[in-house]
Length: 269
Image (tube, rainbow, N blue to C red; front, side):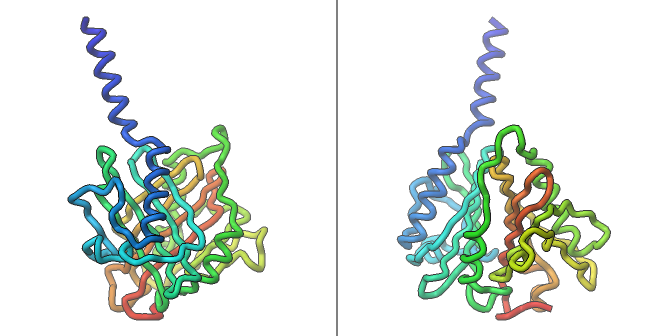
């Protein structure tokens, strides 16, 4: 009897841990992309008390970027079944007002309870939606065979090392060869596609990248880190809204996409 009860409890615990399936999360990102294209913020699984941040500001989701119909030229998503979270990158280069949008969604009991978007447009760091669209479409983010996948710990550690190295040049970052970085519309790998062009010089003053929020997808070797990026915008010393979308293959970083918002147009030091 006790054994049966333990088995039943174990089964319930397993179901709780597996509250999100990949199929469910993929349906959610597909619905999000469709909603953004239509300018309809009424996502099917949206919780009535959803928390919505746009460029780190609390916003009414019905008045934010989701309320604008946008021509989406390309998209790519991550699905994190461990944390019940998704990440989506949208390239909208041919939209009347071009955008690159990074969005993170969190789920509780099949409902979207948190939506966070970094919405970049003209005047933001290195913004060039046409360049972003061109280069992101050249990249290969295929599913990694099961036996070759890195653990979420390895993927997360690679991304953290990259962000840590900005303010501390002694941090060793597991860059791969090749490795390419896409910042706004600037691509480091265009002239040397077989080389490691991701390596960052140390910034002139030490700092720590804070408020890190993660989405990890082992199948794609994918990671996105929402963060507050200090230094780049002089009027926001504690950090401006930024995300780094990273692909890890065999423990090494293959691609990095950075999207950073400027409080003052054309920020950078």
